[in-house]
Image (cartoon, rainbow, N blue to C red):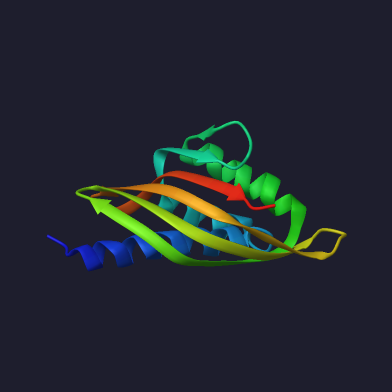
Length: 136
């Protein structure tokens, strides 16, 4: 049995791997996709201001095509996590700032919040749902 602190660190690491993968999309989409396959549950749901994306494959495809196509590079900075663990499920909120270089355009800053749910699996914690809300 793991402690609450162990669970929180494991959840933070899953989210950090997600951000790492999204940041690598433009330079190495195959490596990024491999990491995304490891962080999402097969039936994960994503809300990125579009219709909901259902399934790890749909999420990876959206991120690898739509997001990667729009920027030359990006760097996620997530912080101030608020994580609540309830047995084998957890919910987390993160403040996020992303610096990115738009293809053919300027460097931009994206600020918002992630609201995620996680589920413990035999392989460790995985993302069950992710929601990004941009702050205008």
